[in-house]
Image 1: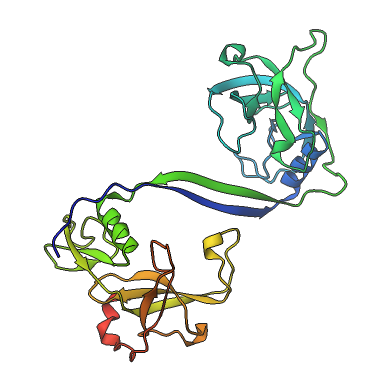
Image 2 (image 1 turned 135 degrees about the horizontal axis):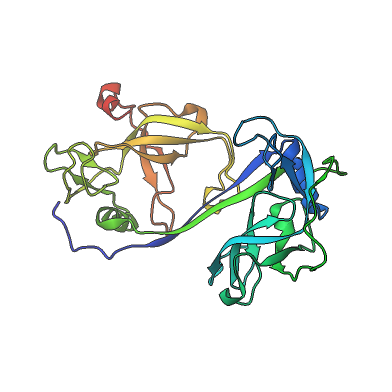
Length: 325
């Protein structure tokens, strides 16, 4: 199969997102519950330093820390950086400064944001205070931001005061959404592969040295390290080499709204020397097996196979796919 015209470069917006859930120990629980109650807690180390935010173990000695203290809601900017273009999910929708603030009574600085009219209004050493969120749940976002604050010239910074860390209805766990937005450019080889899929064809590339066919193509042979350009059409039928049974339903992912359990498998396409992965359908999950012969099923308007189903052929002999496990 000879190479055709160079396909148009493809790009697509991609999102990787998952909720990270963790339980809290006594120190972090007290800190976040305190924020909900408009109280900032730190922890005192063996040498008398007050760490805010608090940690459960001394970063120098590794000793367990439990001596909680309350610090002030005012503090001093130790360093800063201006953010002229806030992104989705950041604390403020208008331009702001990222700041490290050493709260009064603390010996370390807390990272947060400062609401200021512009970079000229921010400086190291300026005095700031917490602006509390109207609705607080026990999270770092209970501090909506910091704001400039003219300190009382007759009053000094408060000294850290011992605190029990006990609050009604303590926060014992948090869920943090992790999200990465990026633009994916598949490159020449994979662009040709994706363009062929839109035509319901499966195209890979052959290595000029070892003659192996890779689907999906990578633009270079992973074994020989040489560039590949010769396009080869593979499949569409193939053989299940190995598989797993999925028992956990994907959350908040519309294109993976599939009833569990289901099977995800490595499939060696006829004419290819690298197994690709795909979902197996059209057969009970407990009847899927190594050597099962399958073919792709396409949905109207889809750019790739929705799943693979049994062809009805006899199972492939193990020796025909053992090198692709």
